[in-house]
Image 1 (spheres, helix red, strand yellow):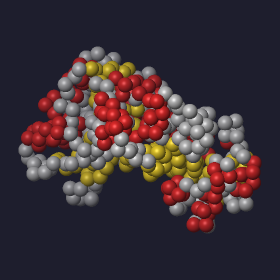
Image 2 (cartoon, rainbow, N blue to C red):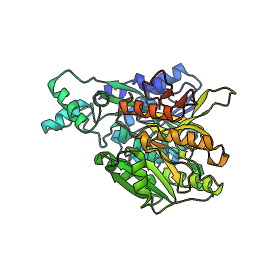
Image 3 (cartoon, helix red, strand yellow):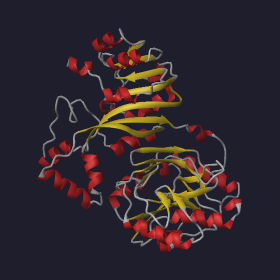
Image 4 (cartoon, rainbow, N blue to C red):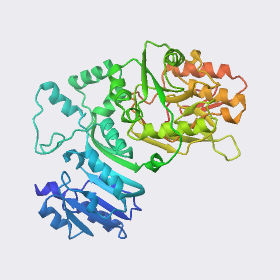
Length: 456
């Protein structure tokens, strides 16, 4: 057991920001991680929390302060707060109420603070082997450690952090790669039957431990004053399981009692939108992918963002969550705009009142919008077309906006672009023959070359 408390997680150590000034480590064990970081960065103040008395006593010899606490029962309000970095190494899976813990840490953290966390991936192939064999007996350590009380995959971990006000990013991972066995090949084939590309399945099945870095989301805006509007959410559905795990159970939509309209059998975004808007109760319509999750607080934030736009008379143009804007450098360069957790990556940039391109995973349109979704574009690039329509109108009040509301695009697609995207790109280029180039998050559209990979 002493080896358990003496371990040093090198990937976790490397993920801690070098400029950290005041660190709180939960589950500090014998203090080896904090001791090593303090050797590398002598100016840091490092507090530790540990359950076991012997380990806490050892850690106290190396750290600035160590507190013995049972995190399942303790009130963290007794800590002073003001931490810019919180380290949680291989601990959250042992906590019975992780959501309560993460919410408590939010209050102890400074604006812009980070959580650096290591978690096991229970979707690793080795666990699936045992499940298929019908024997998930616990071990003394590893993914099925007998002291684990919570199970995580990348998606479930991200949702847990987001719902507590933290914006996650998969910084690093420990991998035990998928072996070249007949069983592994069949599991990958089974994933493909769910619509998950083999590339994505192998990436998920080979991840053994996740090193996740989270940024504190400034939720103070939710406490402010301002108009709030009701929203109708339109969801084209072809994988019911994906819809039910994401949009349908999103706390952000439940908190504002959003109307959700699933649409099955549509052949394009335009078809789904037209069908649903004839039934929608509210003036604001949010067309969203079935794999989008709205975390706690995001519904209130979005309702206020749209309310502010409506109060300002900005109901004629599209509203997106991630895309591109002019860089403002006086040339034709562009910058990223908006906020989304895309698969396992945090995309976080200032919004814009004049978007050049919007990603299609979520787009809001008012019933008075002066733009319309082009059916010939199918499922791709129709939101970029909305931006181009708004630009062609030339009226400031009709320009496309990108807001800063954190959504989780829990997509299982691979990073490569499908042929349907390239077909839509050609349609869009033909629609605007005067444009030499059309910038998008998936690459710049030009008549002479094809974007190869999604960037968002």
